[in-house]
Length: 278
Image (cartoon, rainbow, N blue to C red; front, side):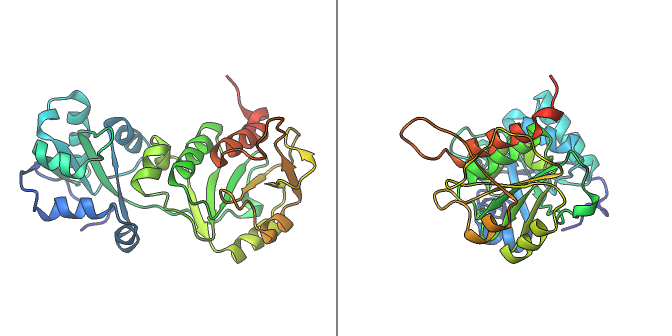
């Protein structure tokens, strides 16, 4: 396969009707994390998501669309974009699309892309109003995807995955981002390296913690780093100790914690609120 920098325009879509086709098998295999890790590729579904990818400057390796949808203006535009970029375009039968599309809310167009991993932020190069989200060993791909989408909504600088995390390029996480996977830089690192970055951070490093006594509804010194722990377990002692502020979301009900994605959204909007306008 070619890289995005040396592709030449493809001639025309290939028609595929066999379920045993190697391309079909490969796209299906990208549902497995092992294959995504080995190839550095992933796939997403839906014309709206792919239009976002196009508008953000991403180029697919392969675009797959259902023959029954080839006259759709959105699909025709995406095929023209992919062919012009040198991507391989596959026009597949209804049976083939049903085989490779998601079982829930199946789409008529999908594409395979190269993953992108951002470098860790450099403390001295961050703008004063910048904000990063650090997620320590997040396990739920739906939560991860929703957080990436929220980070996009508030204009966060990116998301850092610290330690062992679920895969942001899984179909489940990608679907939950609603296209923000193409807009939000995502970095990953080991916990020890994350601690170094946190300790050198020039602004507030804010962790949410059940033992905190400070209300999260305060003001923050930027650039801000919001550090969130795993579902259930919360922040590790090491990352909590590296935060210069620990805050808590007050609740009056019987529960003592919120869903990770919701808690992250509340904190992010508090941090980024002064910089957001209608």
